[in-house]
View 1 (cartoon, rainbow, N blue to C red):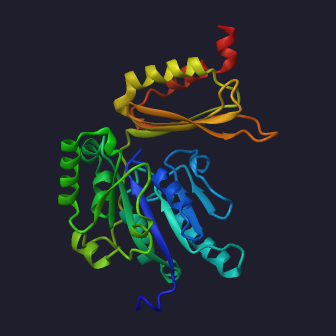
View 2: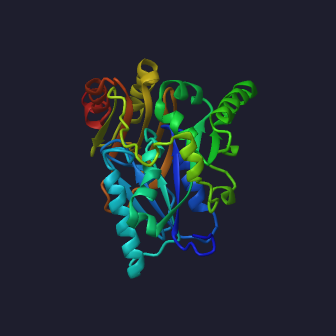
Length: 334
């Protein structure tokens, strides 16, 4: 099929290991005045997704969440169903969008996700895989590539590689990582990205996914379906409808990252802090953590907290108990 005759919906797969900055980049894309309507499919490894609360939208986007499993294996069937449903609703005029961006969980192998657009005939008829964009964390990239097969696959399958958080490392460390990435994937252009700021024209309509090139890397690409995750990597969610005490929470988090930072691949949450009228957004990777003030709580909305933790061999019961002690009622009673 020629480029001129291809009217299928372009799809971008946005991948990268946990905490690399995928949602920050997606926010940047959604803010850009490109005039395109984008359907976003988000995948969370854990049972609860909070990225909807982190996205800046204007109500014109179609946002679909896929939780409690990884898009490359346990919920891959859901991806096929969601794409099929979006395509049917678009044909019926119920929704309107020009392209799709799939933000994978940081633990996803992009290969099985990309397979979907070639081995499922109905999906292949409606959608065209435009490219895979991989974000790599300059601070933790070497460690993640050393320890996680998924991080290696994300780089190997990339059509564009974006190196984030370069301000957190020196020039020698950055150059060393970039040289490693170029050795791993010689065909993907590499550029630095600062808080999601990247040329949109380089990320959309790039027609970068080359099936023949992928088959040279992995001849069994279209038939492999055996991806497994490290069983020691687990996630859990802490929820509370009771406001949290800011001081107690800060003490808990400081102690948590000191004792368990290397095991904490990713933690993020939307928090209700006692006395504050707005959400507080928490983001963390290993021992690096930040908080920002989010949207105000709406009138009639009950403030609540949701915290998602992903890591290896985390002391879940201990962490849950520590967080429960941060609830305002427990603090006042102490």
